[in-house]
Length: 142
Length: 124
Image 1 (cartoon, rainbow over the protein chains, first blue to last red):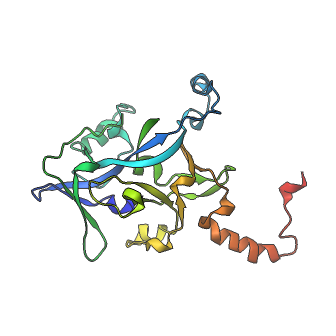
Image 2: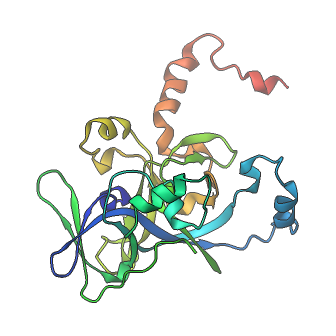
């Protein structure tokens, strides 16, 4: 199974109620401590300040395995999130406000609370069914 | 060991894949998931990313349908070293099947043109 199969798959509650579609798959990457990491790297990144290219300030981690944590389920599927609904960024006004309004009701459900993954006959689309008593967690990235 | 949370679509899909020398390989088109012990994914049971899939998905994105998994070149997740704005591998692109078209063209076509094996950067 691929992540692409899960994306945009329809999500049903335990009582067959339609909850929306899978808008993203949340993963936990194991961050490996690198012994040869320059100790000042974090500080350099901060000192680089405004003039440095964005790529110099961006986070870059040595990673181990990547585990599936859960699914982000949105009541309205179409349209990009631009990442806004998962952080507390508020500018440039009014873009984040509009994007959040469109995607309000999006929640994170833990992978353990997924009861079934069903491949629909025909076009190869998938359907996700949640377990009874699933919890709607906030979608923000911590 | 610490963990970093990322969203697949937001942070990984469509990102550039770089080999160990920083040379661009392909972009991340999909991620293959595997269940416990590398088996099939089962709902609710531990699942992890087994491979980065790179391949000809542009046509299916435009016109619908899907590419069979067997046609998607895969890069094992164990070969991924760093994740930042790009996905950086710990192996060189020569060792990857993902670039076989490029290698084939280099060896069979370009290499046969007189001077085609000359490395301009190798002259110093």
